[in-house]
Length: 63
Image (cartoon, rainbow, N blue to C red):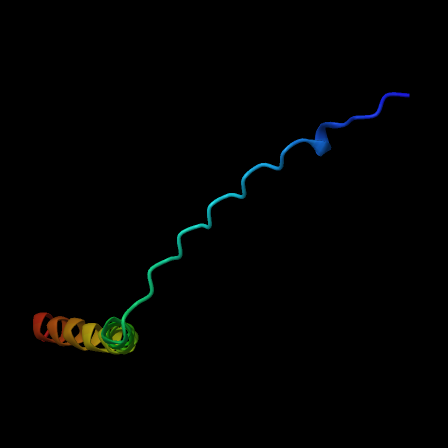
């Protein structure tokens, strides 16, 4: 019977570790948090402001 003996050879070298992803500094984290909060705030305010401007323009045009 045939027996595969390849596993008895020299072991391959381990793969080098993957480089880690760069982390954000505390200052960058703070700026990112402010940008996200600003975008969420604008997400709710912009439609209201836009509707007010459009409504005032329509009222001025058809007055």
